[in-house]
Image (cartoon, rainbow, N blue to C red; front, top):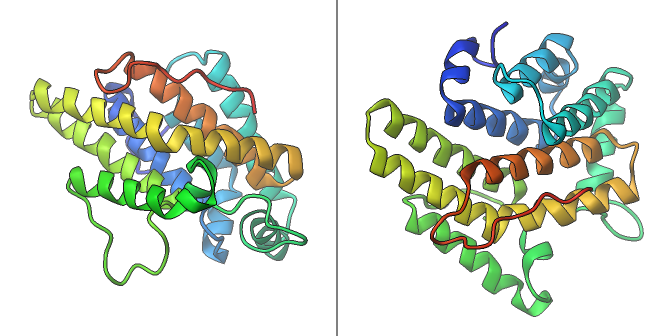
Length: 241
């Protein structure tokens, strides 16, 4: 069975490459749906490819089994829905609802100490990107702490690790893993922890709530695999959204 780009064997040989593919998939799946993407994500073959990449040929532990189950809820929800219903589900969870939007997809709303600190938090994540060689394009019309942007950045870090391993550069690979751990601990895990909890509690039948729960479990599993890192002395413990 192939992965999302047709190379499952390579994903098994390189955990970092497999994770990069997962984050690319999640970035696209959590974005506002388009009709061609809707058709792709509701195919059974797409789900099989996602699970194969997630497990990487290994038997799932409890956390990954829960991630597979959450993702299954997402795929099943898409298959029993029309495109209009899926788009409505996405909008109702992430961008427009009454009396308030349950899960606006911006990390600073969930990681800042209070509203007055939100700009400071957005600047902190933008600075983190820049320190690691990434800048936001001038024509980018959203905020740097959007969930899909954070997933794309983590995807890049995984690609860097994979490239370093392929070149036999252990120092650069270790550095990439350290940055992954720091980014997960500082930004993405606290964000997805709260976001997935709220989503599952507020609209449990929404397919995107199920995908958020799966996403957080995948991220937590990734963080545990990195172990203790110099800049992250206290390792994140997986919550139960």
